Length: 407
Figure (cartoon, rainbow, N blue to C red):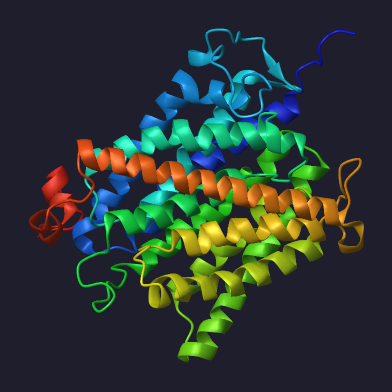
């Protein structure tokens, strides 16, 4: 038999999903984060997102894609696909061109290190951001993508991660917690609060993230089929449920529901459904949205107020905890009794639960350990934290010579 013919419908959907996922970073994540910082640091956060998108794209072409998806070695891919020199125009992944698959995966590789920005906003040197983010993509993201999606050792154990609960959210969350500790807190934290300068901007960014997540999860089916449709459906249900639950939790605790809180809940629901989106049904989406909102709400309080770690924009508490929770609960909610798609041959709920625990522990441990080493190295060569004077003046003017608003 000859090769599978290119399916134009599947290709069109993956190309569209690629645009949606890039839209999540630019401008979605940039606006979401920019609204949460002070006026003097708005452009610096946007600059971080744009620069990481550029740097990550080039590194993905140079080596990242090959390390993630070349060969089936247990721990990391080879380099035969570096710069796509061995990938011709007619190369395929399933029924879509490999170039389309490369671009879809590139948008994931871009947004993941950009998520970590939220842990160290308003205080990390721009050069250090670039150095850490580039090395992190090659040494953390690409190997973990290979483990889970590239035929590596976790894939061989049937670990379930449809769209990145482990590969994206657990890696970014664990690394964000490490970065927040090693870079140090913002001045005066936790005694001095740093309220968002523009909640409306954050809401607009969150809306773009929500829309883009349809491509993030639905596109991971790599086909315009029933799996993509269900992934999109449960993604929406989880986000909507989580937003309502977060607002209710704020109402019960503080006596009012905030805009920033509600959209934070939406993002928590989106992160929690991500690993399970292709494996669960509508009831699973509802349960994951509600559970993700409650657990992430508690995690925010734990990290900032009890542990006193200045993970400034709650990357670990929302993305990390949400992605990990979804990665664990999918072992239960993928069961047919909950409307799920079931398990791989030879797997059941108990075996799947063991595989998911193994995936969570190994991915979080690798991400944290390598991040410690990278941040230590960058500190020795470049330095991590901007000077007190630069921080006081704001990174916009000090690092980039620009202002988001008139002085």
